[in-house]
Image (cartoon, rainbow, N blue to C red):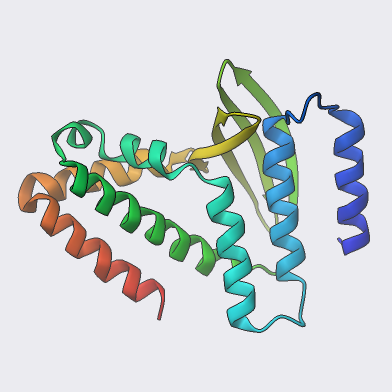
Length: 195
């Protein structure tokens, strides 16, 4: 898909899903972010550092790390001090960014298809499909509405919830080693991903 096609796709979304008073739909917000990521990935004039910086900004603008962090820690969120919550949110957002940047940068011109959108109050689900030459990978985005935009608080890849997956492993670590043990492991993982 060329940059021209991306702009035509964006125009199509604006015609199919009209918005009022600056409000947007969950599908519009997800497709806008994904399309912008694709534009950055296809811009070969950017240095590796410039590409990472632009991708990082796009990811951080669309993810709701406070809701994600609270959901990921689950019962341990209530047990954590304000400082521990802040530290977890910082490390968790850094970890997710490093994880996604690594995956995004390995992009090889896959096709992204936008499917069904379900909205219930301030929560929504947008189904997408990544098509390669050999496989199709379903990715569902769970979003929460804040003001006039929708933000991702969980990603379900091939039926596996990112938040639930992290919650299971993190709860075990907190039970064995406390928050300090968890934070140490998270810092190690971030350093590995950024190499």
